[in-house]
Length: 107
Image (cartoon, rainbow, N blue to C red; front, side):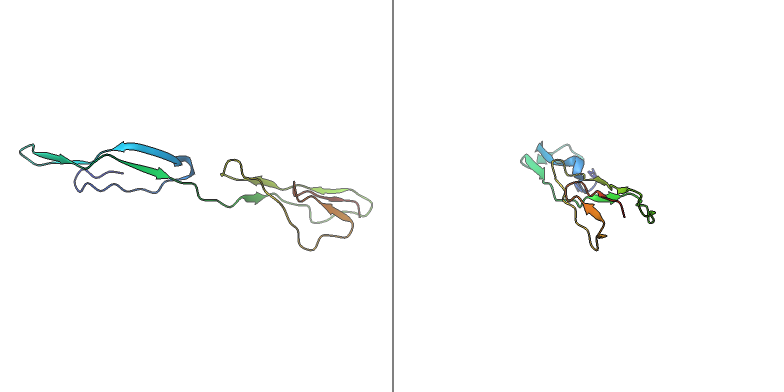
């Protein structure tokens, strides 16, 4: 935002604002219309890595001799990021994909 009273330019860019804004000029004028301007400047918003978000509701019970399968849903606002999955305390009867996060198997 820009304040025409103080000349303050403030804000917090988001992931959607990544890029460059060029040719920014801030000017000031007094009551007699005398004015002055800063030299044109550029603001570049650089990307910071945002953590991916994992969601889903895995089944917490499965009957023996019945196939079990769960694959989480993942989103990442950083375009082009790849994810890798890990698991703690994997059931001995299951397989786990570090590429998709899928936990599958038949106990």
